[in-house]
Image (tube, rainbow, N blue to C red):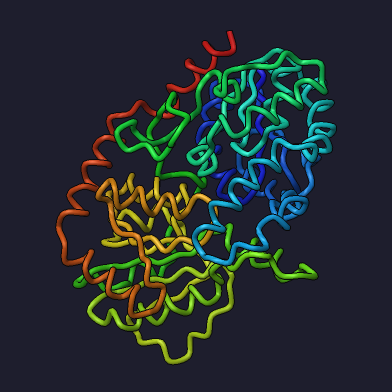
Length: 402
């Protein structure tokens, strides 16, 4: 079987695909990943072909024709929802054509039996329909917030332009369902209910090990881990390079990181590891119980963590569920606000609404003192362990591809 996979966005999108692509490659199937130069390193240790024909994905550039509509929206939370709707329009609007013009010739040359696509990749939807092959979105926060009804009209316009038959079914954007690593009872998807669910793996990156300093951390007190993810630094760099500021106010990643570090200082009865993802942080004056690092193998560290302070990316949430780690979610953009609310709804942790250091520290203390989130997190972990291993996806995908 020949499988084409598209990867956009941040490295987390590629890491969500890795276990699935690895299983396919180990079963003897040919896998071609079409992505950008920036994301190619995610796949360097795996037996897959990588084509870096795609430019770096810049959601703000895609939304540029629509951003003026947000000028009158100054609130922090409503613009987030408004920008999500704008992104939906941008991904299925006329701007999809340059991406399609790059992807379609590659796909025709590769002749895939199946397309596994980044959830944001509507060009891959159209490519699959033009080639007459099935396609499924891979796990991502975008899948969870996507309302198929909102993209149907524009998707049909693109179909009409390409001579494809239009559809009256909103679920035509994912007619064969989607891949997920979360059990149905703990799903974060609002509208795409049909899922092929498999067990979230801990070993995402090959040969990943914890640094030596991690083995020396004090374990006679709660261990708290805080991280801001990989998408925020990239978004911060793009925003810094723009000639004009965004028409909406979004939380600043560097400011959030400083607040997290100050909150960590206040948790003097804990051991706290803070991962910066490369965002500069002044560590002078931080007490000895706070350990700052650019990066750490997150799935491995979470196996020993009592509380995870996170931006609320879907990868991070799944990894915490897999290790039964309660969550304190400090969201910034995109699906993260919805994820934070869903974490509270499921009883897995709390949504941090007071973004000050004191507010973050207060939520952490309450979660560490409350046994309910830990018990609920264990329920999520057990439900995940009841899912089939990722290797079972191979036969399922073979069946979909016919």
